[in-house]
Structures are given as structure tokens and as C-alpha cells.
Image (cartoon, rainbow over all chains, first blue to last red):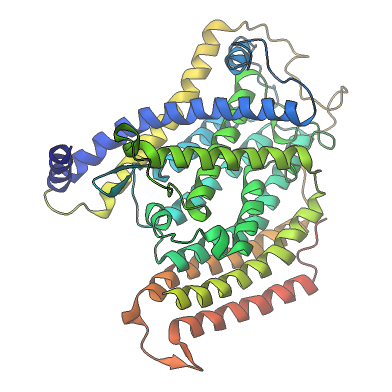
Length: 350
Length: 133
């Protein structure tokens, strides 16, 4: 094992361009499979839990007792649907919107550490592009999804779609600033903007070290992902289906799928920033000790996903003016307070 | 290209990831072209508007209030951008040379910057620039 790591790191220092090219190709293939299959099971988890929360069974026919293959059946149905583009739509933009959404998701996936491997008393984070500023980069790339949403809404040439697109942009810009300030507060305490280092520097989970920032970040994350209670851009009771009104079949499926991809990546980001990442006791079994950080990471991410689904079924949708007011007049001042708290507490601990 | 990895090298995977992100949906759309039926008709391709024929074009002029929203956002987003380099100054003891009112200069300068922006936020709220239409 040591020899392999030695060889890889010496190759990386001699031929960095080729090394990152190979890492990029392997990572892109592996991660697009992991993220897409992960998103399928996030959808499954959501359908199943929503069933549980409202005292129904949820999927229980296709793929055994737990309905594990229900989502595959849904995907096959979407593939056989007619692909209809509205005559008055702006065709190139309409076609590119789901593709841009998918590109944005993959850009996030490139810089997020999905976990770590542990051997010889050291953690090796599993990340493709281990940038020094990955926290900043991921936050920027997460908000690219709203551009795809605006492309979809604007090009459809439908009044409901356009309203949904405008609402989506307003919602995103109201919560982008508090979210950025929360990431900065975390970076102040961790003395780093690298997500892997932030996860490893947490002796005390930042959810406990700065509870205010944790709360603000969760609200801003739910808003960024566009989920109830912040899904005004596709509020079905008000504006039909928001920016996806004119989308059908696989094109709609792709946009929906990217939302769940981003939900998965957002949960991983929350875990890394506030819940200690892959921190947890190493399981003292020879085979399991290497992947035990991955096991802890997986458990935390599932809990975060469960929480996101729970809020969806427990809370009601807010009005759009309430959403923007909450962002600008409550969360922004509170996030500045949290920043001051992080500076004071951070300098006390350091 | 021997030696330490350059900053540019870290971004090679990002280009590959972006291409991969485009390939997957394009492949899905190509698969749909092959297997899905296609019988377009004029009614099917019309825009949905509550079951009636659509009235006029949808590209309306939106309220100017929305534009104010965007302007305020740009101001505060730039504020956040200025805070990012400050993290480096805060984490690097060599850049903190003197004390002001018992705080080191990094903390004091950022405090001043944030106070000015908070005054701006209060002004924007009082002027109702952040009122949704």
C-alpha cells in the first residue's frame, strides 16, 4: 500500500498535467455513476419517507418489498415519453437548460470530498480537484443551478414559467449572501477554505461551535436547492409548475434529476462544513478500518437527507415576499452576528 | 512540466467533469430520439395557459423593483467576495502588525467594513428597495 502511494505521488509531482488528466477522466466516470445512482436513491428515499410521514406505504411493488426498483421503472417510463418542444419556445436555450443543469452538478461533484480512506494513522480524502478554495468554489457552483432554471423558464415563452424563473432568481440572490457569510465563518474557525481541511480541523463540530451559523446555513441550503418551504419557483398551486411547466418527458426528468443530485451534494457539503465530515471512531476491524470514515460520512449524509425530507413534509410553503424578507432582513444581520461570534470564539480557541 | 503542480493543473479535472456533465443528458436525449414515439401536432406544441389559447407573448416587462433587488444583491455579494481574502489575512499572523482599540488590525478593518455595509442595508430597507412587488 505504501509503495503504491509513493509511486502515485512521485508521478503526480513529475507529470502533474497528465496525472490530473487521468484523475479527471477516472473521477468523472466514477463520480457521474455515483452521483446519478445516489440521486436515484435519494428520490426513492424521499418517496418512501413521504409515504411514511403521511401513513401510506410508499413504493412497495417493483423490486421487492421496499420498492427498490420503482425509480428504475419511472426512468424507463420517462424514456418512452414523446419528446415535445413547444412551437413558440426559444429552442436552443430550451434544449440547453437541462444540459447546463447537469454540467453545474458535475462541477460541484468535482471539488467535493465524498469521504476519506484511513490507513497508517492518516486520512486520505477522496476528492478529484483538491483546490485550496474548494469551499468558495462549491458554493459558487451550487448556485449555477438557478441559471439553468432561468434558462428553462425564460425560453419556454410561458407566463407561468417566466414568473417561476423570476422568483427563482430573487430567492437565490436573497440567500446567497447569508450562505456565503456562513461559509466564511466556518473558514475563520478552520483557518482554511479547503473542504477536506475544514472537515479535519473540526475538533468540536461547527454545528455546536456556531449553532447560529448552522441554522442559517440549513435554511440557505434548502433555499438553494429549491425545496419546500422555499420552492416558490415551482409552486404548483400558484403557477402550475413554475419554470418546468413546458417541459415534459425526459427533459423534465433531467431537470428533476439534477435537483436531487444537488440535494445529495448539498447534504455532503453540510456534513463537511458543520458535522465533522468523516470524523468518527475508527472501527478496529482490519478490513473495515480503511473504509470506516466512509461509513461515518454515509450515516451523517443519510441523516441530513432525512432531515431535508422531513422539513418538506412538515412545513408549509412561504409566500415569496416572506422568503425575500426573511433572507435580507433576518438572516443577513444574523449571519454577520455569527461571523463576529466565529472571530471571537475562533481567536479564543486558537 | 516537471516539478510542483501548478494551479492550472487542478482545473484540468473540472473541464473533463463539465464535458461529462454534458455527455450524460445528451446521451439520454439521443436515446429518447430512438425509442420514443413522435407524432407532433399543432395543438400538442402550443403553450400551456390554463387550457385556453395563449394570449400574447410571455416575454413581459417586469417591475423595476426587481432590478433594485438585483442591484442590492450585487453590492452585498461583492462584500462577501471581499471577505474571502480577509480569511487569509486573519489566518496569517505575519499580516497582523498592529493593534487598534485592543483588536488586531485585521479584525478592526473588517469590523469597519461590515458596519458601513450594515448601514447600507438599513438604508436599503428603509427606502423599501427590498420590498417584493
